[in-house]
Length: 455
Image 1 (cartoon, rainbow, N blue to C red):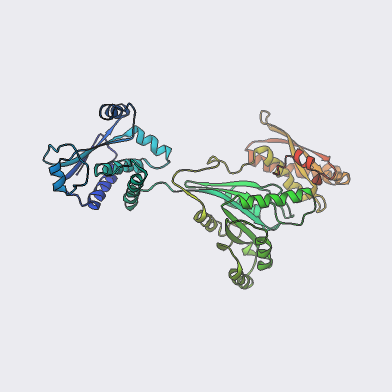
Image 2 (cartoon, rainbow, N blue to C red):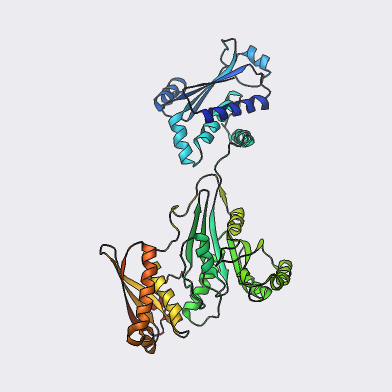
């Protein structure tokens, strides 16, 4: 019998009785045994420690076994080191004292429920009563395994938390930025029909109650034409090395095996690999199936999944697949606060919005030489004042960006402002100035001045 004092939480009391009965059955104890479980405050447990152990401190749990030699024989527990005489008719085998305050603090510290913490402390105390201890490493391991076994059998488990980095790689225009925006549920990477949109590794952060996934959107694979292209390729390599999972994105509209070989040959990593066939909604089953079958025979990956990043098809399945391979923790392990969805600040995100619109509206020969730097972001002014410099590489590009009577830069500015206001949640006064920095993509100093951080 379990006698509980000074505690009124009925659901936890129910689980405490389950733990008690599980231990009684596991060790074949007579039904007549009794354990007294007492919940005390910090002052009381500190006094107990001082009186009985000569220790002046607050601890989480104290255990006092007391069974006479005669009672030990009756219980067939001859090997257990019980010392104190049994003085009652009931076979009381010990007292357990749990400090309620410490239990609450430790539940928060280890990020699991108070129910789990109290049941753990009680189970720990019961094993002490039955002669188990953790004085040396071997005994501690035995006791720890028993505790986990007993609590797991009753489904009183620790919180399981998944967390890690997932890198998205693929050829240009395969839909990496669209995918990261879809998975995160927020716009963190700019999207454009033109290739080589992403220049830096952008992190988008997925959060739920028991998971944090840090997605890294990398620049697309492409031919190296200048210094910045070389740095972008280095970023892809670095991101693929320092990650738990690699998402390899290929386009369902193009030959699958050829794309797979192109991507896999550039990856030198032991990370788990998930091959994603994107834009699956744009091709027929008859066209896709033979290629998928062929791909499944040669692909050296952990999973293959057809998706539509744009429409969200199978993105929920992808999240569950990622969780399957992420590292597991028994406490809440987050690299970023739960409310964050990107590592980029507002200034950087507004700059990227402006570059996105420039990529969208300008002719093909201009966009890749465009870079945006926000020079002022004054939130004290209402509407918020944002000044930005839009750079191009050649003097003859400037009038094209400005447009006839300033129509093109006005178009870029107006659409950028609308997206920026959605992002910031306030009205914005956006002013964009067009400037020229000759051949900046081959100039390491200029690249650094623009804030493109390549390690």
